[in-house]
Amino acid sequence: MTELNIWLLSGTGLFAGLTGSMLGIGGGFFIVPILTLVMHLPIKIAIGSSLVAIVANASLAASRYTRTQLTNIKLGLLLCSTTVPGAIIGGLLGEIFSPAILSTFFGLVLIYVAYTMMASQDTSSQKQSYWDNPITTTSADTQDIARYYDKATAKFVGYRINRIPQGLGGSFFAGLLSSLLGIGGGVVQVPVMNIIMTVPIKAAIGTSTFIMAITTAVGALVYYYHGYIHPFVVAPLLLGILPGALIGTTLTERIGTTILRRAFGVLLFITAILMFLKAANLI
Amino acid sequence: MKHFAFMNNIQRQQNTKRNKKNLNDLISTGFMVCTLLSLTMIIAGFILLFFSDIENVQLSIRLDQIPAAITLNLGILVLVSTPIIQVILASVKFSLERDKVFAGISLLVLALLSTCFIIALV
Image (cartoon, rainbow over all chains, first blue to last red):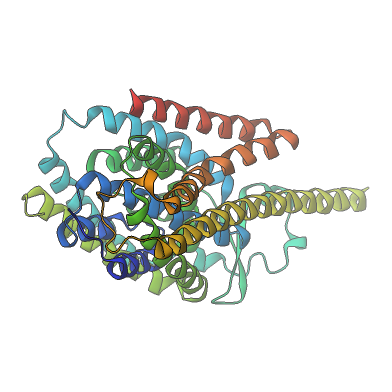
């Protein structure tokens, strides 16, 4: 019999909500180990609870980011159209590839991406103030330029979405890896949008939460159907996630893009280390 | 003539911005309403749980024995359906605006999500 510690569950939810909504990731990499290693819950209940927590976190964050236009809904839906097939194929290929080799390969890719994100400048910085006076732009400009209001600099930031085919490919890869390795798609999706498609980091995080909410919801429904989502585990987690997501989204809107990129880089390094540990069967 | 073209550009620009804002407001409100509704049910269920006779919350407790579990379960079901509802809302909005490309993309996403759900169940 497993006795549940409500305070530990709420604390886990608070931390996952804060980091997840701030960086556009799920937070499953944190919730699942706590539930299995510390609370000794069965792995399927841990994954099911983690999926519901991610949906709650991403939905709360997406609500706020959509209102402030940090979420690009059209871009999100477009990328979903390749992420979901990627996840389906990943699920079917799961038994063919060795998880150890995949984890090692993915860890190496993450270290490279983390270095790139931390070393380079945010693409949006060159285009800031472009939309300060939108009435002067031409109609051609309005068709392919999206924008959001950056509270940190008190300016509108306009951006162009470049290399859409490569971005769709990267998004497919994100879905494939998230399904093969059991990770949230955010750690792949955000760099794909930011580095390949030149979407500013804040808009990439906002759009990633929207994509994640949609893709994770299906997994959560399947776990719910099979009875792996236990209300007594999920409820305290959600009570922590609510304030965590509200604080996280406020911080993302107010802090600078450089700090955000570095924080994301650190997160990628941590994920890479976890992948190496997973490959070595240590976790 | 040049003046009319300029005014048309501004009008088109304002319409595009208004549509985009409407879509963002609709999805944002949809996310907020559904999430808050589900969280209210979950919190209500949690409060009911505290007033029930259970001393230690354990996984072995049968859910149908506790009224709180029904409220909690319903809240969770609304929560996990929230993002799917937003895709449906977006597809309706795009269809009403006659944006064929994105109406098609959102319907494609819905079809893919349904496929994913069916594959997982089989």
